[in-house]
Length: 375
Image 1: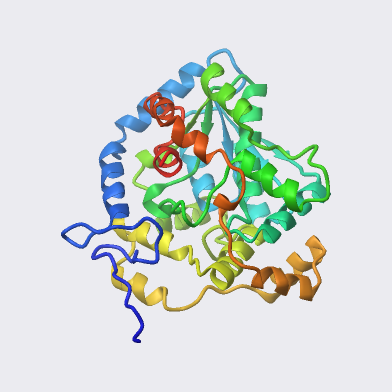
Image 2: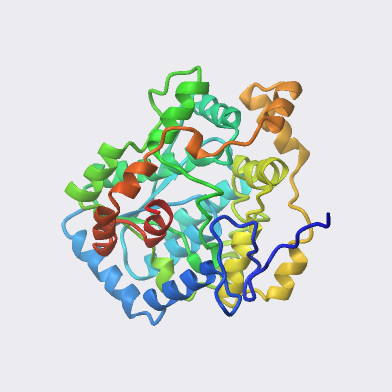
């Protein structure tokens, strides 16, 4: 039998290996159509961004800060912090430090907060707990090995907003440059963290900031804390942003999407492609194509070359998580599972779709969450 050819979108480079994909009569995939809708919903005229900034300023009257912003030393959060500082927002910059930062990321954060004169808080980890949790997710054999980091970041931002009575959390996501990862590739929620750790963990989680549903709903409904994405309303050109950040602040590029963190780079550039056949560049390149920042031909050429990873990062993962070469190879060979093999909040999200639609309409959750998690 011959090899079955993948059908590919006529606009981006998504094809039939992408979970949940479908094509219309023009051969354009449903993800491109979602992007088109979001382009209409989030215009970049400037008026909508100014209205958002004004609302954030009003909410911060009489308080020390108008908002909190998560920072990593990456391009998106650095550029956004700069542009919002120019608009007069009083931000508290928060960094969740999982001890995997590159030196470049550390220097980028230092340069940005110092030169912009933004207050900065670094939240440290209990390394034994965190490493045990990361090891648990590797043993769980799902693609979601890096979600402890994402969950922790989200939780500490809510905690800082609550502590300083702030009603807005600034998120640096841009659908025009990042897209959003299909549900069949990644999933995260607090119950999932508990479920995996209960099965594979050995160190009790006492300090890890997990996002459990009762706390999250309290922050959303009672405290009315909103996570907003100002980059959605900015004509954000990533290459131009990198050049401007370098010229203005001495900010340095770290070599790849999310490569400012060594463990995240291990997951996206080694674990995903080697074990799960997932190449995150499909998401990034397709988003850039849809927003006119990369040609389809350029993306098709670039995707032919496999992701790269430094050998010392792989060795560091083994050493830090206490994995022998044999244990690591066994993890790489274990049968593939998904979040559906563990307990999650996903059934709850789907059952309460109407409630989350109301939260979406009130600006309490992002559209990408609603689209991805309530279906």
